[in-house]
Each structure stands twice: as structure tokens, then as C-alpha cells.
Image (cartoon, rainbow, N blue to C red; front, top):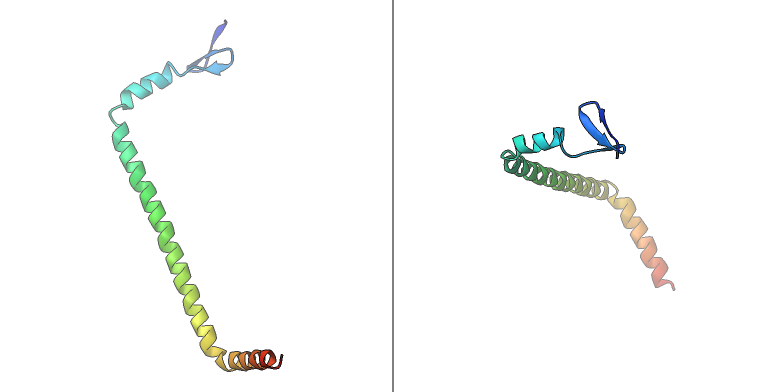
Length: 91
């Protein structure tokens, strides 16, 4: 099989090998991996918590809007409710 040099990486049959540049990177950063992993887990937990908080705020705002709409349109809603009730009683 032919081996040719392409840039800083070695290629064999068009595929880049995991050795060379990547192997050195792995060895240099092996000790730092637990720290990066812990930081990533914390970041993801914050992102999940942020999504939950945004959802709770959105639901709260919608509830307030619904309460205000019912308070403002109460007379019209009462008329509509009475019309529906009389229509059902007329059956």
C-alpha cells in the first residue's frame, strides 16, 4: 500500500491515520481530560437548567395574560356562556 505525506498528517489510501499529530495531542492532554469532562458536564447541566427556567417564565407569562384576558372580557364571556347553557337546555 502506498504511503504519501499530505500536510502534517500521513495518509494511507486516502485515509488519515490517528497516529502522528493526533497521538501526540492525546498524550499531552491525557491528564487534562477529567477536568475538561467535568467542565463539560457542568456546562450541560446549566444549559438544561436554563431551558427549564425559560420554559417556566414563558408559562408564567402566558398564565398572567390569560388571567388578564378573562378579567377584561368577563362580561362578553358571561354572555357567551349563558348562550351556550341556554342552547344546551333547549335541546
